Image 1 (tube, helix red, strand yellow):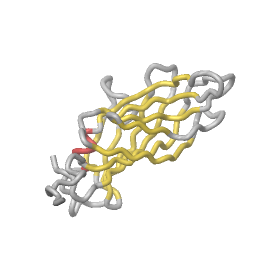
Image 2 (cartoon, one colour):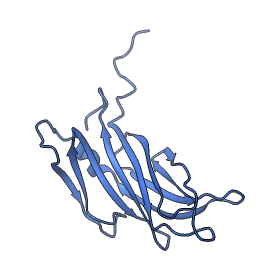
Image 3 (cartoon, one colour):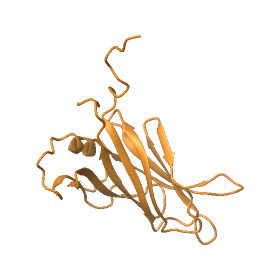
Length: 173
């Protein structure tokens, strides 16, 4: 049967690789520590990191890759404390808008100098960003380092790095 010319990539804008770098000063949920892991959601996609035992400043350095179809959907994350015999405890959540990142990634970047700042996001009450976050052009890639302050918990931040992955044949918006 002949193909109609459309591919399964027609609805995709590209991919975003989310490196869950580390947690900082996460809440204690066990006796003196926690066994944290992170669940990241984008629309119907959901991925999680591995559990780090007995640590409130865990270093995951784990990459999770999401396909981007609708840049208006927020990226959400939730930190949990792994428990063996009971339901895992929640250790806070955060969300952020990926649209500025996607827009920067879709700019014509040929000839852009390495290290150029494409966009900056400021912390405000409407987002969970803990400090100014720049979207930069680095080694031919669009990168954003972002530090998120966790909500619904007494303390804690999670540091992420976003990297855009272009797909040949993906649609332009």
